[in-house]
Image (cartoon, rainbow, N blue to C red; front, side, top):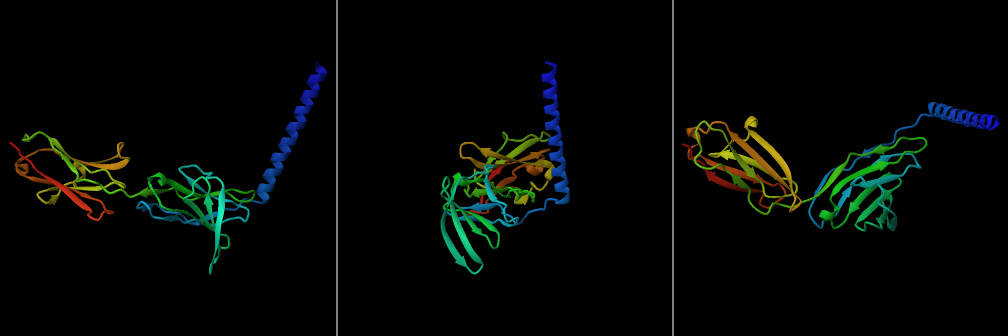
Length: 264
Protein backbone atom coordinates (compact mmCIF):
# COMPACT_ATOMS: atom_id res chain seq x y z
CA UNK A 1 0.00 0.00 0.00
CA UNK A 2 2.84 2.37 0.90
CA UNK A 3 4.55 1.68 -2.43
CA UNK A 4 1.35 2.39 -4.39
CA UNK A 5 0.79 5.60 -2.43
CA UNK A 6 4.36 6.73 -3.11
CA UNK A 7 3.94 6.01 -6.82
CA UNK A 8 0.68 7.99 -6.94
CA UNK A 9 2.29 10.85 -5.04
CA UNK A 10 5.26 10.87 -7.40
CA UNK A 11 2.94 10.88 -10.42
CA UNK A 12 0.93 13.74 -8.93
CA UNK A 13 4.12 15.75 -8.33
CA UNK A 14 5.26 15.18 -11.91
CA UNK A 15 1.89 16.35 -13.30
CA UNK A 16 1.90 19.35 -10.96
CA UNK A 17 5.42 20.37 -11.99
CA UNK A 18 4.60 20.03 -15.71
CA UNK A 19 1.43 22.10 -15.28
CA UNK A 20 3.32 24.77 -13.35
CA UNK A 21 6.00 24.93 -16.04
CA UNK A 22 3.35 25.15 -18.77
CA UNK A 23 1.62 28.05 -17.01
CA UNK A 24 4.97 29.74 -16.42
CA UNK A 25 5.96 29.38 -20.06
CA UNK A 26 2.56 30.64 -21.21
CA UNK A 27 2.82 33.66 -18.93
CA UNK A 28 6.36 34.32 -20.13
CA UNK A 29 5.22 34.11 -23.76
CA UNK A 30 2.31 36.45 -23.10
CA UNK A 31 4.62 38.89 -21.34
CA UNK A 32 7.10 38.79 -24.22
CA UNK A 33 4.34 38.85 -26.85
CA UNK A 34 1.42 40.85 -25.37
CA UNK A 35 -1.91 40.52 -27.14
CA UNK A 36 -2.92 43.37 -29.41
CA UNK A 37 -6.30 45.04 -29.55
CA UNK A 38 -8.69 44.49 -32.42
CA UNK A 39 -11.14 47.29 -33.13
CA UNK A 40 -14.54 47.86 -34.65
CA UNK A 41 -14.01 51.08 -36.60
CA UNK A 42 -17.61 51.66 -37.71
CA UNK A 43 -20.29 50.13 -35.52
CA UNK A 44 -23.90 49.28 -36.29
CA UNK A 45 -26.59 51.66 -35.07
CA UNK A 46 -30.22 51.17 -34.09
CA UNK A 47 -32.67 51.16 -36.98
CA UNK A 48 -36.39 51.93 -37.26
CA UNK A 49 -37.76 50.27 -40.40
CA UNK A 50 -41.11 49.85 -42.10
CA UNK A 51 -42.36 46.33 -42.90
CA UNK A 52 -40.98 45.07 -46.21
CA UNK A 53 -37.89 47.28 -46.26
CA UNK A 54 -34.29 46.08 -46.52
CA UNK A 55 -31.96 47.26 -43.76
CA UNK A 56 -28.21 47.01 -43.28
CA UNK A 57 -26.08 47.04 -40.14
CA UNK A 58 -22.49 48.10 -40.92
CA UNK A 59 -19.44 46.57 -39.26
CA UNK A 60 -16.02 47.77 -40.42
CA UNK A 61 -13.14 46.36 -38.42
CA UNK A 62 -9.41 46.34 -37.82
CA UNK A 63 -8.45 42.75 -37.04
CA UNK A 64 -5.87 40.00 -37.23
CA UNK A 65 -5.85 38.05 -40.50
CA UNK A 66 -7.00 34.86 -38.76
CA UNK A 67 -9.73 36.46 -36.63
CA UNK A 68 -13.37 35.63 -37.38
CA UNK A 69 -16.12 38.26 -37.48
CA UNK A 70 -19.56 37.10 -36.36
CA UNK A 71 -22.98 38.63 -35.86
CA UNK A 72 -25.24 38.06 -32.86
CA UNK A 73 -29.03 38.32 -32.88
CA UNK A 74 -30.75 38.45 -29.50
CA UNK A 75 -27.51 37.17 -27.93
CA UNK A 76 -27.52 34.14 -30.24
CA UNK A 77 -24.06 34.34 -31.80
CA UNK A 78 -24.14 31.22 -33.94
CA UNK A 79 -26.43 32.00 -36.85
CA UNK A 80 -25.36 28.82 -38.58
CA UNK A 81 -23.95 27.95 -41.96
CA UNK A 82 -23.74 30.70 -44.59
CA UNK A 83 -23.89 29.86 -48.30
CA UNK A 84 -22.16 31.99 -50.93
CA UNK A 85 -24.77 33.62 -53.18
CA UNK A 86 -22.59 35.69 -55.51
CA UNK A 87 -19.59 37.96 -55.92
CA UNK A 88 -19.90 41.64 -56.83
CA UNK A 89 -16.95 43.52 -58.34
CA UNK A 90 -16.72 47.15 -57.20
CA UNK A 91 -14.07 49.86 -57.39
CA UNK A 92 -13.42 49.20 -53.67
CA UNK A 93 -12.76 45.53 -54.22
CA UNK A 94 -14.62 42.24 -54.48
CA UNK A 95 -17.71 41.84 -52.29
CA UNK A 96 -18.82 38.33 -51.37
CA UNK A 97 -22.48 37.98 -50.38
CA UNK A 98 -23.51 35.07 -48.19
CA UNK A 99 -26.95 33.88 -47.08
CA UNK A 100 -27.57 32.16 -43.75
CA UNK A 101 -29.26 28.82 -44.35
CA UNK A 102 -31.34 29.00 -41.16
CA UNK A 103 -32.29 32.66 -41.73
CA UNK A 104 -32.74 33.18 -45.49
CA UNK A 105 -33.48 36.91 -45.13
CA UNK A 106 -30.13 37.51 -43.41
CA UNK A 107 -27.26 38.33 -45.80
CA UNK A 108 -23.60 38.90 -44.91
CA UNK A 109 -21.63 41.15 -47.29
CA UNK A 110 -17.86 40.78 -46.91
CA UNK A 111 -15.16 42.95 -48.44
CA UNK A 112 -11.93 41.29 -47.30
CA UNK A 113 -9.71 44.09 -48.60
CA UNK A 114 -11.50 46.80 -46.59
CA UNK A 115 -12.59 44.54 -43.71
CA UNK A 116 -16.29 45.23 -44.22
CA UNK A 117 -18.66 42.68 -42.63
CA UNK A 118 -22.12 44.17 -43.13
CA UNK A 119 -25.33 42.37 -42.18
CA UNK A 120 -28.43 42.96 -44.33
CA UNK A 121 -31.99 41.81 -43.71
CA UNK A 122 -34.47 41.77 -46.59
CA UNK A 123 -38.25 42.16 -46.39
CA UNK A 124 -38.16 42.93 -42.66
CA UNK A 125 -41.07 42.11 -40.37
CA UNK A 126 -41.68 42.15 -36.64
CA UNK A 127 -40.22 38.62 -36.50
CA UNK A 128 -36.81 40.12 -37.31
CA UNK A 129 -36.85 42.60 -34.43
CA UNK A 130 -34.31 42.35 -31.68
CA UNK A 131 -30.80 43.17 -30.54
CA UNK A 132 -27.85 42.92 -32.93
CA UNK A 133 -24.12 42.98 -32.24
CA UNK A 134 -20.97 42.57 -34.32
CA UNK A 135 -18.04 40.68 -32.75
CA UNK A 136 -14.42 39.97 -33.63
CA UNK A 137 -13.36 36.70 -32.07
CA UNK A 138 -10.16 36.49 -30.04
CA UNK A 139 -7.04 34.82 -31.40
CA UNK A 140 -3.79 33.62 -29.84
CA UNK A 141 -2.34 37.08 -30.37
CA UNK A 142 -5.33 39.41 -30.19
CA UNK A 143 -8.18 40.32 -27.86
CA UNK A 144 -11.80 40.05 -28.93
CA UNK A 145 -13.82 43.15 -29.77
CA UNK A 146 -17.55 43.80 -29.60
CA UNK A 147 -19.75 46.53 -30.98
CA UNK A 148 -22.55 48.22 -29.10
CA UNK A 149 -25.77 46.23 -28.85
CA UNK A 150 -28.25 47.90 -31.20
CA UNK A 151 -31.93 47.41 -31.91
CA UNK A 152 -34.03 46.76 -34.99
CA UNK A 153 -37.55 48.08 -34.46
CA UNK A 154 -40.33 47.63 -37.02
CA UNK A 155 -42.44 50.77 -37.19
CA UNK A 156 -46.08 50.32 -36.16
CA UNK A 157 -48.00 53.64 -35.98
CA UNK A 158 -50.78 54.17 -33.42
CA UNK A 159 -54.19 53.18 -34.75
CA UNK A 160 -56.23 55.52 -32.57
CA UNK A 161 -56.24 58.73 -30.57
CA UNK A 162 -54.91 58.89 -27.02
CA UNK A 163 -57.26 58.46 -24.07
CA UNK A 164 -57.85 60.83 -21.16
CA UNK A 165 -58.61 59.20 -17.82
CA UNK A 166 -60.24 61.77 -15.56
CA UNK A 167 -61.44 61.67 -11.96
CA UNK A 168 -65.12 61.92 -11.09
CA UNK A 169 -66.46 65.43 -11.70
CA UNK A 170 -66.67 67.92 -10.21
CA UNK A 171 -63.24 68.18 -8.63
CA UNK A 172 -63.01 69.31 -5.03
CA UNK A 173 -60.92 72.34 -4.19
CA UNK A 174 -57.96 71.53 -1.96
CA UNK A 175 -58.14 67.80 -2.75
CA UNK A 176 -55.34 66.60 -5.05
CA UNK A 177 -56.23 64.44 -8.03
CA UNK A 178 -54.65 62.91 -11.13
CA UNK A 179 -55.21 63.33 -14.85
CA UNK A 180 -53.86 60.44 -16.91
CA UNK A 181 -53.26 60.43 -20.65
CA UNK A 182 -52.64 57.06 -22.34
CA UNK A 183 -51.27 56.74 -25.87
CA UNK A 184 -52.55 54.32 -28.46
CA UNK A 185 -50.15 51.33 -28.76
CA UNK A 186 -47.31 51.87 -31.24
CA UNK A 187 -43.69 51.06 -32.02
CA UNK A 188 -41.66 52.98 -31.08
CA UNK A 189 -43.54 54.66 -28.25
CA UNK A 190 -45.46 57.88 -28.88
CA UNK A 191 -44.76 61.15 -27.12
CA UNK A 192 -47.50 62.80 -25.05
CA UNK A 193 -48.01 66.48 -24.26
CA UNK A 194 -50.69 67.77 -21.88
CA UNK A 195 -52.27 71.22 -22.20
CA UNK A 196 -54.44 73.37 -19.96
CA UNK A 197 -56.29 75.97 -22.03
CA UNK A 198 -53.68 75.57 -24.82
CA UNK A 199 -50.73 76.02 -22.44
CA UNK A 200 -48.37 73.10 -21.90
CA UNK A 201 -48.57 71.91 -18.32
CA UNK A 202 -46.58 68.68 -18.20
CA UNK A 203 -43.35 70.70 -18.35
CA UNK A 204 -43.79 71.04 -14.58
CA UNK A 205 -41.71 67.93 -13.91
CA UNK A 206 -42.52 67.74 -10.21
CA UNK A 207 -46.19 67.18 -11.05
CA UNK A 208 -45.82 64.94 -14.12
CA UNK A 209 -44.79 61.30 -14.34
CA UNK A 210 -44.12 59.32 -17.51
CA UNK A 211 -44.64 55.55 -17.54
CA UNK A 212 -43.68 53.31 -20.48
CA UNK A 213 -45.32 49.90 -20.76
CA UNK A 214 -45.63 47.01 -23.21
CA UNK A 215 -49.15 46.21 -24.34
CA UNK A 216 -49.34 42.42 -24.16
CA UNK A 217 -52.23 42.16 -26.63
CA UNK A 218 -50.44 44.00 -29.44
CA UNK A 219 -46.78 43.69 -28.36
CA UNK A 220 -46.51 47.44 -28.87
CA UNK A 221 -45.42 50.29 -26.62
CA UNK A 222 -47.76 52.43 -24.55
CA UNK A 223 -46.91 55.79 -23.00
CA UNK A 224 -48.74 57.08 -19.94
CA UNK A 225 -48.54 60.66 -18.72
CA UNK A 226 -49.84 61.10 -15.18
CA UNK A 227 -50.29 64.71 -14.07
CA UNK A 228 -51.13 65.55 -10.47
CA UNK A 229 -53.25 68.60 -9.69
CA UNK A 230 -52.17 69.37 -6.14
CA UNK A 231 -54.96 71.89 -5.52
CA UNK A 232 -57.80 72.10 -8.07
CA UNK A 233 -58.56 75.78 -7.43
CA UNK A 234 -60.89 78.04 -9.38
CA UNK A 235 -58.36 78.30 -12.25
CA UNK A 236 -59.24 74.72 -13.13
CA UNK A 237 -62.99 75.36 -13.31
CA UNK A 238 -64.16 75.03 -16.93
CA UNK A 239 -60.55 74.48 -17.97
CA UNK A 240 -60.03 72.69 -21.27
CA UNK A 241 -57.52 69.87 -20.95
CA UNK A 242 -55.97 68.51 -24.13
CA UNK A 243 -53.68 65.52 -24.54
CA UNK A 244 -51.65 65.49 -27.75
CA UNK A 245 -50.10 62.28 -29.06
CA UNK A 246 -47.04 62.73 -31.31
CA UNK A 247 -45.67 59.91 -33.45
CA UNK A 248 -42.84 60.94 -35.75
CA UNK A 249 -43.14 58.06 -38.23
CA UNK A 250 -46.81 58.58 -39.19
CA UNK A 251 -48.30 60.57 -42.06
CA UNK A 252 -50.59 62.22 -39.51
CA UNK A 253 -48.11 62.50 -36.63
CA UNK A 254 -50.35 64.37 -34.17
CA UNK A 255 -53.65 63.21 -32.68
CA UNK A 256 -55.34 64.63 -29.62
CA UNK A 257 -58.29 64.34 -27.26
CA UNK A 258 -59.88 67.10 -25.14
CA UNK A 259 -62.06 67.32 -22.04
CA UNK A 260 -63.50 70.00 -19.76
CA UNK A 261 -62.96 70.04 -16.00
CA UNK A 262 -65.34 71.31 -13.34
CA UNK A 263 -64.43 72.39 -9.80
CA UNK A 264 -66.59 73.28 -6.83
